Image 1: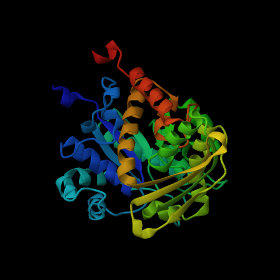
Image 2 (image 1 turned 90 degrees about the vertical axis):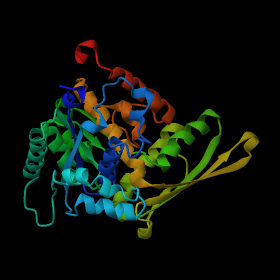
Image 3 (image 1 turned 90 degrees about the horizontal axis):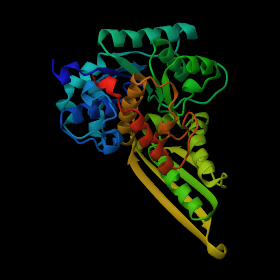
Length: 376
């Protein structure tokens, strides 16, 4: 049997599987695997991960949960019409999109759903286990890419139900959103005792990515930041979700934490998020940084980041799924703090500076290299 036929197959179970990010993940993986596009933005395709034993992109099998029923091929066509996916790509990878769509199961809870939380967790976990068994997978990684949910105390939110289901199904878990997920108090003990690796939360794709570079720059050059204010304009599902003040607060917490950690204290200023539906999947982030230089000279740095959220997020999701799957195969468990490079609010202990986070990621890449007995 050839190496390509005997290679382990790894599942990527996406929560929010018919959303813009998930659709771009699935379409992007198919496009790169087919040689239609290069893996731009994927750190796992750079030299630092050579020899780390990551699953090949061609070995990834997609499925997931969603509460909407728009088929993936139709969703991909809409994204292509909006300039998120290349023109003509959905038709070129129609078979891959249809195959993934067949593996998407109804999510929840939906309005009128009377099932108790434990019933929902069981149902979701059963779907995950069936996916692994039916497709003959070595393992599956669960990745939350659903819209941000409001941070409200009390009952276990949907993101935590899915996270609990991942633990119950024996699947490593990645929370790419600022939603609660494994951070719910009821899941602390199960996560610690699961023996599974997990990572999160809230993918760092734009404004906070830039802050994790600029914050250390000001600190290292001994420049005093007096105020740091920001505004985000975005549309699409995330824009609508973040119009809820509670959801926006959950998102902003990670943005502000990066500044406090890298500058040594939180500067004055706030970050605002505005829903602009006509922007669709595109976003604009603006920062105004007031700082003091030598002899108290007052200066200002302004930055503008304009990007496509799904195109920024998708390569990171593929990276995280591959790294977490390999970590599981290698026997790692608990919070993968070395993946802080990818998150605004990383689990575990680690630095907030992007440079230091990259060094930690590179160290993990070395640690994941198979031992001689694994390659036999």
